[in-house]
Image (cartoon, rainbow, N blue to C red; front, top):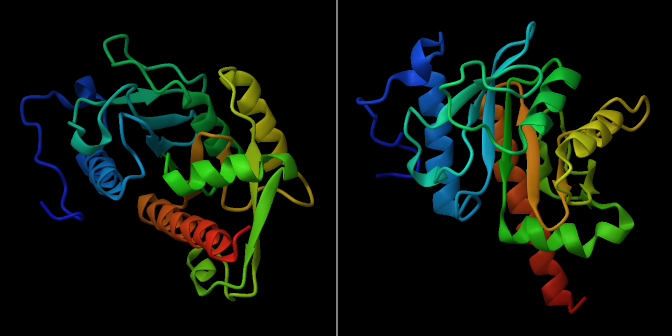
Length: 229
């Protein structure tokens, strides 16, 4: 199977128990999971992904908790509401970090998809720069892959939040930063010793952002190694 090919369909599953969800959205997330798993960004059942189904009232199609992202079936998803709760009691358990997806979707009206990965490079950088609150990336042509960025001279600030099991508290901290009137988070953020969250106007854009950030994270860390810092 190629890295861009959707995993085999699960014809035995009843997709989302009759909810009105486009199968293409489900298979799009399955394709993302297979590709990210192959790249080593979503291993050991880590990561979570979502697509916005509707804004008002909020509905998100989200990966269920504890699923192998390299082998997602059509039944490995849940539709959640603005409280992060599954909209049918028969749904599998949502991701533990569902409220972070809800916060991003509610605060950023242009968002159509949200993706979260656990790469080696992002994890290392999130710990290395935690005391500084984050780090900047500038001067790289690949920055132009981020939505709205037109020049390599752009300076992208990657904020780092502390890791916690108190997801409601973390979600509130995230909302505060997304609402900042002068310096809001632009394209994504890291959680210390955890991973990357980013988003886009649709799944294609969000996936592109993951690829751009993961490339830049690896470049930044390898550059530090070469410089002996």
